[in-house]
Amino acid sequence: MDLSPDDVRDVLRVLDSSGLDELHLELEHLTLTVRREGASAWTVEQQVLRRPAVEGGGEPAVHVENRAPRAAVPDGLVAVHPPLLGTFYRAPKPGAPPFVDVGDRVDEETVVGIVETMKMMTPVHAGVRGTVVEFRTDNGQFAATDAVLLLLEPA
Amino acid sequence: MRIRRLLIANRGEIAARVIRTCARLGIESVLAASDADLDALPARLADRVVRLGPAPAAESYLDPAAVVRAAKAVEAGAVHPGYGFLSENPSLARACRDSGIVFVGPAPETLEAVGDKLRARSHALAAGLPVVPGGEAADLAGAQAVAAEVGYPLLVKAVGGGGGRGMKLVRSPDELPQTLDIAVSEAAAAFGDPRVYLERFVASGRHVEVQVLGDGARAVALGDRDCSVQRRYQKLFEEAPAPLLSERIRAEMAAAATTLATHLGYRGLGTVELLYDRERDTFHFLEMNARIQVEHPVTEMVTGIDLVAEQLAVAEGLALRMRQEDVALTGHAVECRINAEEWAHDFRPSPGRIERVVLPAGDGIRVDTHVQSGSVVPPYYDSLLAKLIVHGVDRADALARARAALDLLRIDGVPTTVPMHQALLADPEFAAGGVDTAFFERFLAIRRPDVVGVP
Image 1 (spheres, each protein chain N blue to C red):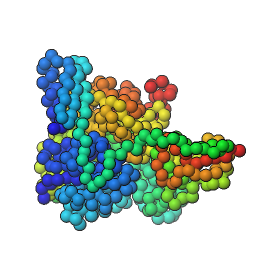
Image 2: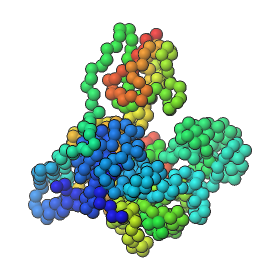
Image 3: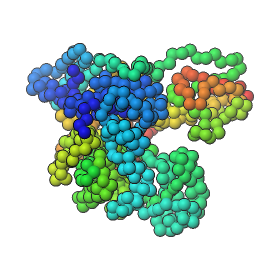
Image 4: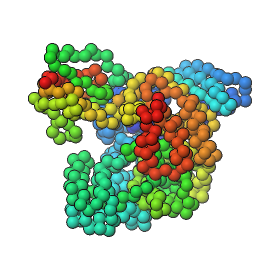
């Protein structure tokens, strides 16, 4: 059984007329803690415990945390990491030429790509002056914050 | 047709919201979730969960074929598209129709009519609505002719744009040729449609919209909302009714909205977006949203109507269950959009794991959310975590209650925009009501957290 907001309101009405300041309820699929926070103010902590059975295959996926070790960066080269985790794009829009390519010279402020996170675009700056040596993340590929997007040879 | 099993082809708080109404109405809810959302709160709340596809939206929530496949696999009688994603996509509506599945939204022909800005504008004109002076410009000569009528400054807008994308300001005649060239090529690249049109620039406008519900023959207006507090055309705070409008303007707006809905033979829930010109005390039609919107709860709070239930009823083919005179508005409601963003760092998005969620509760307080303690906020979708909706006897009461409720709300683990809302609710200009769409940038310039030290 899940509790709807109306159910929770009913619980609060009962509690309002009682002297109780806190109620903790544990059901098979749910835990609920309501706490009085002042004259007529309450807070609710609700935890729906049921794990869904998924039809059509697939496993619940957690993509946010990526604890993979950083790929080795060859001596003398500098790795560019994404400023935020997200999807890496090498060009400003599909079909457009890439911001930079292997062999291009860049300085600290040169935009070498963009990362899309939660529908927001963040530019990726080279961070150092140098030459683009290699891309380690493909266009459109997801990248955690410790991923190596590309390698630069500092000038 | 009676809907007994509904496929919800969406995620986040709106999925949880639709599931709630299904549970109340005894409709079996089946959530179609991407791999990133299979263990999210909406999946735990739904009666059943079916896998839609991989995490990237293009391969799941934005794939009409995947949605229809999922609906057929579970033998759902109807598909609710929520907002965003495919909610206004005629091809999904048509694919549902071809498969004998009810699409909870307007007919594909209606979606096409209002989805194209120029067509929507011509429908609005035909229905007798005031539209912002302007017109289509096929080339520079055409643009100059339109500009001569509307005057400067003016906006060049991409027909395929929306949400503030594909819009350019032209301050003087000498700027027109170059801006037009850029606008046309950008529109072609970004939207696959090079068409642009010119519109008068309203210096001080408020974004006011009217919620409508139609059954194909008749339409009712369910009050208005003010959504002028925006950053980069993204709404942050909404309220109902829109404050500080004369009764005459309010009545004219409602009449305009129902006239357009009736003209279109509109069946479904929709919103007529209007631009209220503060200097001229007039309003113009902007566009029509043919879906449920993020801000729908403020209308629910002041009308007492479950908009999802009414949306499902008209989708089933039922006639409207209310007349215009049955719609009574009570008090004032406000909504704060709580996003996973750091406003102290230029609203940087902040996906991650949520440690703890504590929500305010009580009469007049509603929180629509898809997160609980331990939830993972994936980086693939938008940053909306929760909506705090508060209902008071009047606007001042609603704002006071919202301040108190915000102080009790805790979402730990990822930075959120709660501090921004606290600062907003403390702002005197905002508290006075009726701010225009330029207000929030002014507010940010003064109240930027790195300037005033708000954490």
